[in-house]
Image 1: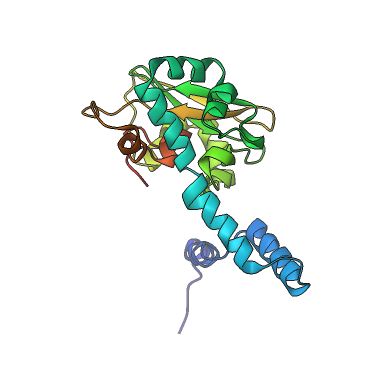
Image 2: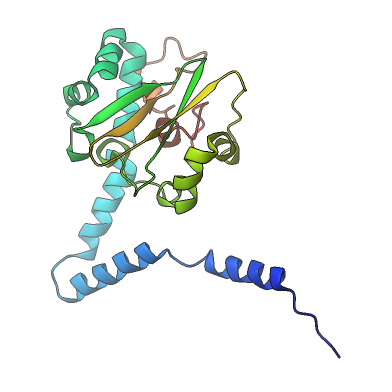
Length: 212
């Protein structure tokens, strides 16, 4: 009985198996955490509490509050676009990752997409923990070369007459997208509007404020 070696099939199986493994950076972080816990230097419950706070409480709810305030207050929106750190500081949200921040606005003619091609600089103090895909090499490289293709993979179809602008974050300058206020949201309170804003819409991989 003869068997045929299928290189493409083997590569597919290899990729499938490794897609379920943690990234190298995640493994390093876990090893460091284990070492610190074993030495009694940190409490794992404290670590879990901080991760939960940045993921679910601090961000992206802070960013969503900034967006909702800008939708309701034209003067605040103007200040936000002119001097984002100062406007964010009005809400008490200014932090290390937002001291050098620029807000870019989506319009009917423009869609903005944020990436960090060199590493994964991200305004975590208002958006919380960066999603894994934001730090992935594939997103960081392709967002610049093929932004419409990347957006399509997120389920966002951008018409040809809409300009896509890609903003490359650095340690010195980070970006936040101000999404358009959705139709039919007139008369809603700031709290209600905050609930409409998704983290992805503030990165630019969402245009219609569908939470993902």
